[in-house]
Image (cartoon, rainbow, N blue to C red):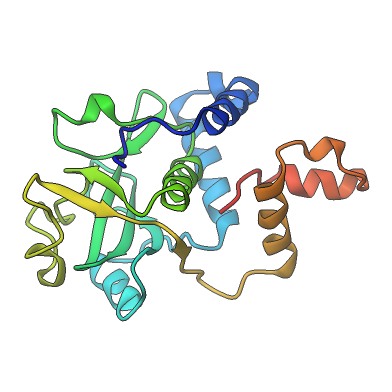
Length: 216
């Protein structure tokens, strides 16, 4: 399955409902980025100003699909996903334009890639693709390291197929520290339902759940 492929209808409807009800939809770019940062800091797998080399060291010997999000070291990009592929660590840059986030890619593929209101929603989308298929293939996305050269040696030789696609599998985030049990429970609940307000829980707990409405 390729990243530009459609999600299952029920998943698409979930994302659309969330986008339609998102009060941030009309915000300025500055507010959108601030909201994205807030969500990222709640994930536990956002590593801030980590370098590409440091990310590679963290991902070393990790199973395929292990990933983290960090600040991009390139001026034109805000964030980067560092992920372990079958060929080694790969860096996938995240582009922010017109209030939306999407993976960086070659010019011909860019119009086909989905855009998202937040970085966490983008990651959640590709994690969901990974759960629903054996591989989520990103055509040309992130096929360059942040310096503009080829991927690091461990990935440059074989991380791309003859058609020029990078095989992307996002399954297991790398946390900066052991996440709180409350947060793990929140993520688990979000995987089971989007109707938090219907749960027989105190309002305080509902507020905690809705403060991070993602399942990864």
